[in-house]
Length: 405
Image 1 (tube, rainbow, N blue to C red):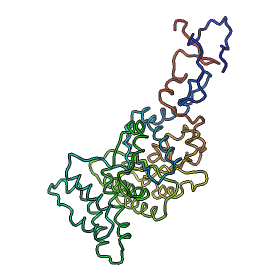
Image 2 (image 1 turned 30 degrees about the horizontal axis):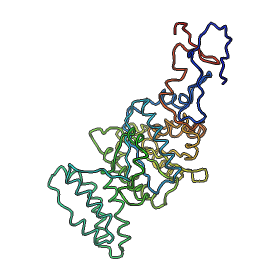
Image 3 (image 1 turned 135 degrees about the horizontal axis):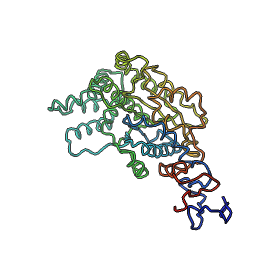
Image 4 (image 1 turned 60 degrees about the vertical axis):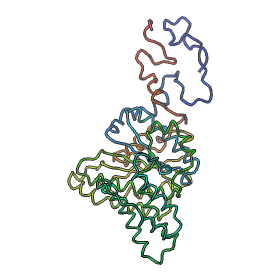
């Protein structure tokens, strides 16, 4: 694009801007407003979501992220970029997206019972011997409030079941006993996981993630506990007779995990099939259940496994029982090229849309998942595209149709 007008000086049409032409710098954080007869980059990426993503307004979205030592630096950067892109998708359809992170626990001041429970679990995680773990559990305070007891019953029973197994097993040493009980303790602590609105997290992402984690256990343990929590939340939703809010749970996960972790996660997911089968039977069998679904987004490299382990979870349920979706992304391509127009629906609605999750995955090119410029696209820039402006005619350069404008 040159700095002089391509129209003859005698043209009867006037420029949109009579002032000096603006040169955009080579490095820009947002795409420029294109002067050629084409959609701008933001419109190309977000327009399909704007047109076809209205279904998202029917759901609550909860995103689970983990930062410490489970994702490498490029995966963490890709996760941050995708969260920022989700913010733009939420803006298009007015969605509220919550983000939970098991690395950080919320402060509790007003609820003394909850504070005691949280501290008990933290003390048990810090204990180095089996006897200390059992002693701390046996010394937990009784809860007088019946409603509170009912609220804690599920998590407490799960931890207690593991404690009883290790209590009488003399073959288990301290390390083995701790490995047995830690996943359930971390899952119980997940109710205290810090939660942000997506807008807040994106705005303060660097400050938040630079803080050391307040839950000091391994990343893979947090990941397993995260799925324990999701499975129990899903089970409670599926068993509810009161009509829980339809929820899409989105998890960012690494390309590969230990096989034993995958087996444990599979076991948690299979436990959902009993209440799920009941709901499928009560409705049309071909109707896909969407009361609680999980979308897994694995971040890998061209030399990785392509998220094959997570695909096994995606394949667990079929037809009406299919409540898990999986999307594999190349972290490097996300950083280099940014999100593409086919990513939006697969990322947010893949777990509730068979067409998005299955057919498009086979028929459409993976290239549509990635953009071309790598810069952040925004709703503001999409709205500034020439296709959305009245009074603008297509041409080599845009011109005002009204001579009075």
